[in-house]
Structure formats: structure tokens, C-alpha cells
Length: 158
Figure 1 (spheres, rainbow, N blue to C red):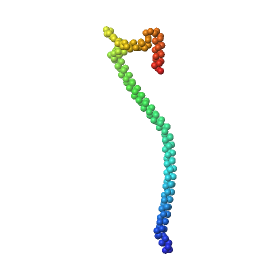
Figure 2 (cartoon, rainbow, N blue to C red; figure 1 turned 135 degrees about the vertical axis):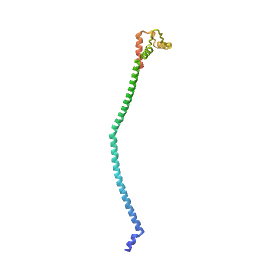
Figure 3 (cartoon, rainbow, N blue to C red; figure 1 turned 180 degrees about the vertical axis):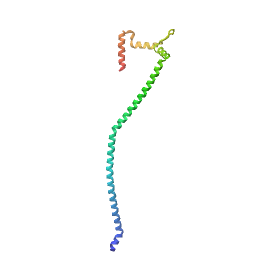
């Protein structure tokens, strides 16, 4: 027994035992890590699948919601512009109810004058010559001028 006791406490035996214990610990820890990794990988795959499913399921409704919000914003902007236009037209109507404003506009736009007044119309002679030279209206019959105007307006539309 003395040999066994000596063998048990010898340095070589202790080192070998420590090595075996360490190897067993390392093996157990690797086994645990691998088990943990495989569980995390499965969980991660499941989580990724759930997230992808949610993204796919919510993508179309979110796109619709965003486009509807944009349409609502556009309609609200149009509504504000329409209200402004209505206010402008109400102001214009109120101005036309005033006889002084109506008389001023009639005189300005239709070149009306009151009895006893002298009306003047200033025409730029250069502009008149240019337009006559351009069309040559003074030398053509009236129906040719009408047809020329139709052709000219058709060319401007294109």
C-alpha cells in the first residue's frame, strides 16, 4: 500500500489527474457550447423567419397607408387652395358691387368715356406695321386672312 499512496501523491500522477480533469472540463464546456450554439441557431432561424414574415405581411398595408396619407395631404392642399380662391372671388364680387369700382373697370377695359370727355387711344405704329408686314393682310381678301389665322393657331398648338 505504500506504493499506492506514493503513487497517488507523486507529481506525475497529480499532473496526469489534472490533465484528465481539465480535458474533461474542456470537453464538457465544448459540448455545452455546441448545444447552446445549436439552440441559438435554431432560435435565430425562427426569429429571422418570424421577422421576415412580419415584414412581408406588413409591407403592402404600410405602402397603402403611406400612399393614402400622401393623397390626403394633396387633397388638403387642394382644399386650402380652393378656399383661398373662393375668398378671392368673394372679394372680387364685393368690389364689383361697388358702383365706383365698376365704372372704373368699364372705363379702363372698354375705353368708355363720359359725355363731355375726350377719349384717347395710343397705338404703337411700329407694332402695327410689323403685324401687317408679317401677315400681309392689307393685300389679301378677308377669307384668306381667316384661313391664315387658323393655320397660325394650329401651328402654335403643336
